[in-house]
Image (cartoon, rainbow, N blue to C red; front, top):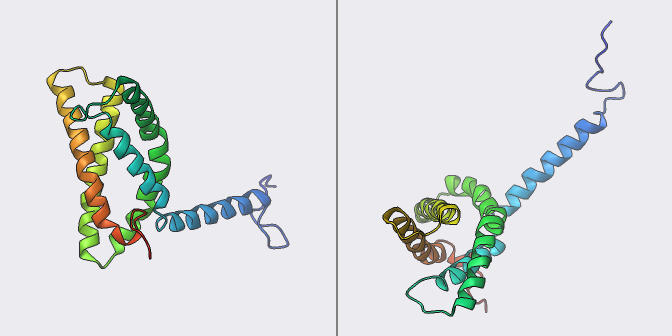
Length: 169
């Protein structure tokens, strides 16, 4: 005799763990579909990172007190908030971009993929290795601020119809 439990009970219903798992999977997939269209939080996080990053740029003279708090905010937002908001939006949005029949949105979306990836990776390198003043760290810092400067306008052009910066009448 087998000691294994049947996967479906005699009444035809799924056992509680399987039903709960299916409910969770359904909720997660519907959340990801909704998230692909909800850009507001992701855009606000990108704007906040852009502005806090500008305060860290050497070309803009800022008091050390402001720069220190801007750096702390920029690091925490970039390491924690960005992946949980903009990163999740980006992952959910990928399916939309791949199936879009609008060539302009596909091209700018692909360009944004490269820019966001470069900015995030260079930011991680700067976070863990720092800007030490040698050539590799200077190149990484330059790649980070340059990709950040390019990211803002490209993102606005890509999503202007849905941007939080667009004033609605």
